[in-house]
Length: 85
Image (tube, rainbow, N blue to C red):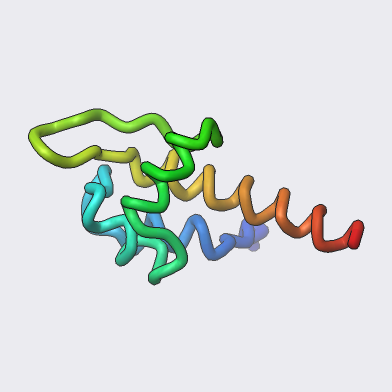
């Protein structure tokens, strides 16, 4: 029997998203309300690292996998910060 590789919530976000990209207005749906497109824009304006986006018309498009990876890394870093407190 093959060993099953566990998936985390961030993998599930990508698997359940119907597109390869997440538009600025859809960030809130993709993250179940944890972040909005405006949140990402504000973080970028403050010099925080955010996933690279491609501007198309009036919206940014984020690669769904890269956005999920960024969320995973951000969550991991917050967990380390919380452990130290």
